[in-house]
Image (cartoon, rainbow, N blue to C red):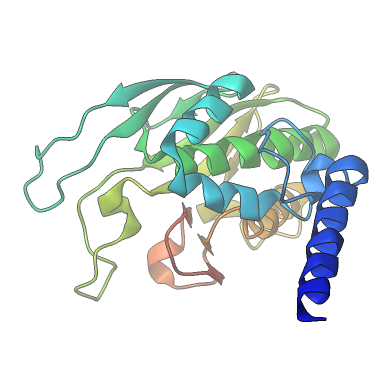
Length: 227
């Protein structure tokens, strides 16, 4: 009897796996391989976090999406924060100000996903203008979390600070100036911040503390926070 139960359980598991693979859209199916250009779905965040455990697949996913990067070898140029092999962003859908941006592969994958599926379409939807530039305060920086002795995810090239955006029509959207505005600029910042929470492990903005009054902090560390 026990053997038959095990056989029936195995058949049931295989059946569910087949149904998921066959009928559930890829963006909702955790069993399907990641594709950064597919629509956002229930499985998107899980797939992004899983990329941290397979560097080879992660890099291929970026290449398949059209992201251009340079592999930076492990180095100890900053003795307090030696880095393993990382990637430097060369080209994405939108130019970034504040380059060079050196990141872990899974951080770059999450950033591209946010850019592709949130930043660009929301700019078109709210302003009827394409996104021309993403402004940053950089990615890798050897420092502690403010007021603590704990290393920031920036120290591991696993975070980026976003300060604002520029549209093709010249409109400038700055976190520092427009976060609390009841305007299209404020609406844009609120939406892209809220949706970043579904793609990054940690999303921090001006409502978190004074240190983040002028930017969004986005990282793919082990903690999970949306503020």
